[in-house]
Length: 192
Image (cartoon, rainbow, N blue to C red; front, top):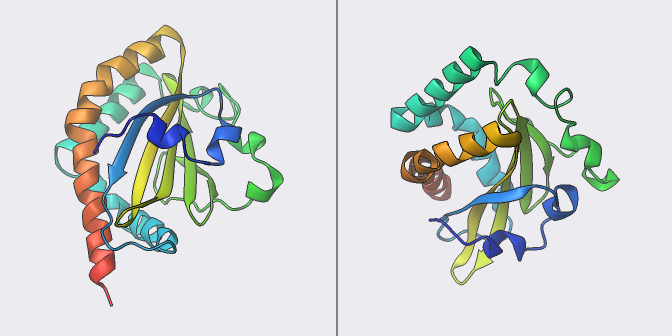
């Protein structure tokens, strides 16, 4: 379920101090019925373990097409990434967040930090510098997972790219991700 920008900006996330110059692009809620305050690390571990399932279906085809386009147009070459075109946000991390990152195997994202209720990872290419931020948010039924996508488009090409992919994100990618991540929670919650 899509949420307003304030669902992210009104939370006391550490990412606010690290990336105040990034635009909030998307906020998405994932239901986790029965979740408690200490379930976030287990859900993150389950999402990392099940990451391969995200590469199936129409959403998987879109990602494969995106990687092919990136290869063809040079968007994903090393010179367009973090540490070359843009400095990594690791350089902005306060001392207490350094060395907390948990790598995601075979992911194009680079983990920045992980806490008991917050996780952030970055990616940079020829079109943008982006952050995927996951937060564990209390609600009337317990807790839910919330994802924010923060971006710094790379000039006019980046702004055009983000506008062109918006319908695909909202119509295909996020709904598929929602089904997958909510299923991951359900499987985790019923496992003894």
